Each structure stands twice: as structure tokens, then as C-alpha cells.
Image (cartoon, rainbow over all chains, first blue to last red; front, side, top):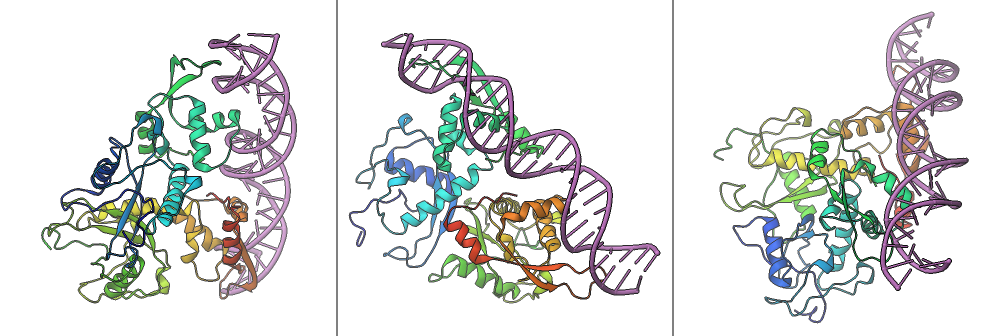
Length: 195
Length: 195
DNA sequence: CCAAAAGTGTTCGTTGTACACCCATGC
DNA sequence: GCATGGGTGTACAACGAACACTTTTGG
């Protein structure tokens, strides 16, 4: 759409009258990209009257955390193409989508500092190094390995006997997130983790 | 409106086609309560299809921080009455407004831990004790005076020579928030304050 | 003088940072 | 053996919690 004809945009579409917001976000993402079973997190809502050339559009932005190797994207519906793009190398996007992306990244960081939404982004079993790399990406800073491990002691993890396979170094132990323990801690208001 | 006829509700109304979201939030608040010149902060957006008996309504919630002594509220437009209510003593509200209020309080706390939005809530010049009481309310916990003062060293404040008047104890020094220094720190990505 | 709140210093335990070191695996 | 990342310990600095203490005002 003029004047944004050849620019990339964040997937988005109109909501149906009888679905709730998360459902709409998941449906639209699926229709345009084929991404399925993604846990979406609400970020912010954008509503400047002139942000869309065709008229008044209010956009509710959602983000999700996932490992792109685990999913396959395929443009469908009216999407011409789909592509993964690094946040650190973002081109000009259509509409106010650069602004939306920046605000949403800020919200992601804000939430990640206070709750481990990141577990949606890791496979069910993960190594502590994968866990650390996720935080390093999201916070855009490096952490010391030993110190990172001390810091996450407050996050309830389940250590498995299972180990990494097919790596050409000492295989790492696999962990998973103890959601039950986490929710119990939240319920008792004992959650103190801060990155 | 049935079945919520005799319940309190958070002020809200429909947005106009040509105003942006903050403007609408401020206008609606002013029309219903007379509150004017309030800085509003966006919280979350609620859109379950059945949350309003008359049909599909999507609500974008906003909160503001202010000192209620500094403002006078007066029901107007279609509002029958207006009242300040303590968060800790909240009655049943119409629609899903209790849910909205709880989520919005959580968002306030999340934001307050990472940025001093609280300065909108204090008078231009304030004592450190007023400052502390604000955090104590928002975080719902008491802080030690000496320790609180050490903690806020990272927040840029301007100390004035002026002092409290007409108090029957040692008058406290007045401070104000150094917004320029704050924005400079943000710009340089040197902001580290965490409550 | 006392009451009340302002404002500061000290101690001690916890946490964060920097860095060194050993361990297990593939080649 | 070597390279690679996994995994842990230590020492010191920084920070937080608890608490005591002095200061300045009004009455």
C-alpha cells in the first residue's frame, strides 16, 4: 500500500468480532506465516489517528519468544513473503512499525527482568548456557558464566540426568523450568528474581 | 446498566475517530470527573468478546499518579458520582473492572521498579519522606529511612535551599526531580536504578 | 525540658564481579 | 595430546538490612 509498497511490515490484520485479543494475535500470525502454537505476550497499543493511510487503525502489539530453528515459516493468505530479521539490523518498515518494534523490545526487556517469560523461548529441556545466551540477547550484554549461574538460583529449575548429545565437548546437563514451583512462589508472593 | 446497575466502575468511554489514545484517556477522565492536566500511562488492553453485555468493547486501560489533595473531582457528563477509593479496600466493580484494576496495579509496580514515573505523583518540590511514602504505598512495603536514601542516590535530584514550612518538627529539605539529567542518563543508557 | 521527624554513621551479612581453575568429551 | 565448552571455587568490592545516634524545629 502506498507509500509503503516495497517495505517489510510486522504481521497484522483485523480482529474478528467474536474472538479475544490473544486468539486474534495467534490466528493472524498463523494465517500469514504458518507459525502455530506460539505463546503471545501483549505489549502496547498504538492509536495515532494518522498512523495508517487508509483511515483509523488501532494496533495492539504482541511479541513471542521462540527458537527459530524449531519452526518453519511460510508466507500465506495475503502475505507476499516472510523472513526472520535480526533486531539489530532492522530495515525501514511500513507504517509506524519501527516504532512499534522498538517499544515492544523495551517491554520485552522490562518483563524479562521481573518474570521468566523467557521459558517460552527455550525448548522444554535446555542447557544453562542456552539459558544464558537468551538473556544475553535480550538484555544485549554479556554475563560471566559462573556469576550467571549463581544469579538464577532463585528460578525454580528441574535438573535432569539426561545430557546433551552429539557435541564435541563435554556434554551439558539438561534442565527444565519448574512451572508448578514457580506458580506456587508467585502465589505466596515470595518471588524475588531480578536480572 | 444491567447486571451492573449499582456498582462503581472505572471512568471510561468511547474514543473519537480523530484523537489519539492518550488524548482520549485524558478527555474521558476530564469529562466524567473534572480531573485536568493529568499525565496518563498506558497499561494493558482488554478485549474478551463477552466482557460487555451490550456487545464487543475493547478497553485500553491507563493509570495516573497524583496527589488527591491537589485535585478536586466532580461528577459530570453521564457520571452519577465520583469517589476516591483505596486500592486496598476495593468493592466489587462493574464489568471486568476489578480485573483491569489489578492488572494495572501490577503494571504500575513493574514500571515503578525501573523508571521514576512516580515523579508525576509528587508536587514539583517534595521532601525525601514524601518520596519514600510514595514507594511504600506503591510497593506495599515499608522501607528503612536511611537505607531508602542510600538506594535513591542513582536518581538525579536537585536539592533546594528551601525547607518545609509550618511543621512542628525539624523542617525537611525540599528536592525536585532533575528531568534533564534523567533524560541524559537514559540517552546514554547509563540508567541503573532498580527498586 | 519533651515530642517529633530530619538526617547520618556503623556494623554485619548477602550479593555481585572478576578471575582462576579443573572436568569431560571428540578428534 | 589438544581444543572446546561444561562446571565450580575464591577473594574482594559493593550493596542491603538493622539499628543507633545526633540535629532541628515547635510547644
